[in-house]
Length: 359
Image (cartoon, rainbow, N blue to C red):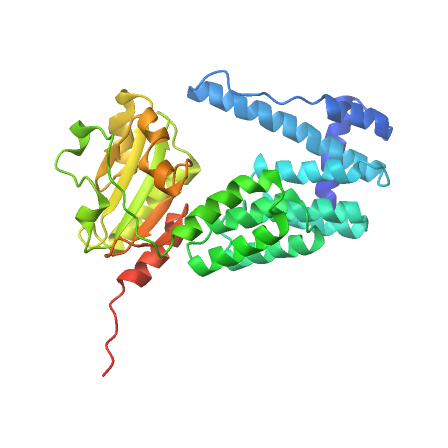
């Protein structure tokens, strides 16, 4: 099936280009290097965003086909590893098709048993480990660590291992293990450092008191709500930090809504309250954002953008990324954190589960 897809893509490219059955590597690469991607959408409306996505997909499809033509027609060319690596990266980032990356990299590393191709394949497989939907954490980690064994200095592998720690698990022990691995292998890689520092800061806070004061919030929307985390002492709670652009609900937000509803079916607000810190860039969008952040009426603190940028989160936790969920126990201690509410929900279940008494 993989070989058939290769042949079909190559045939389509030849028809589109009016190319001969076999082109020189130089001719293929001229076309490949001439492909241009749009820098950004020309508007925020649905039509503009859809047009931007089509333009990106068209450019990616063209480069993917040209990469395949070069590898098929000129397998010994020095740029084969580069263009195949880009082809596989585009499958992950543009097509959201990491499964295809796994199958193609298996096939091509057999067809072209070259070290450079193996390294490119390893980087792509690490990226696939964090883009394929539905994989459990153990499988994702297995793929990323196998890629590390082949490409121990590949940036994509370091990024994947770091993302595993903050996006796909809320288990503090697993986060510490991944942090130690990335610190050992990628501490000098500037492209990995940003995510690495984020994980370092949050891992260091686990087991420590979280003393958040809700200053600088919009009082009209928080009247009667607690003004510090200490006022909720005695009950575990969830704390979420999120920044919203009006009209934008991405896949992460949609998944969070589903997982939040599932969590609420197990643990109602009186058992596990949730606090949301939200900033919106347009007051007219506030009502819609409130429904997104707090579908069951949990307290939400509305923070203007300037306050957000100098907020308690950046001051105490040194984080600027929105979306992190934090599980705080009844004593006010940070027990676990993750960008995945599904994973953090597992930690909440363990924390709230009735304790068995010995007899």
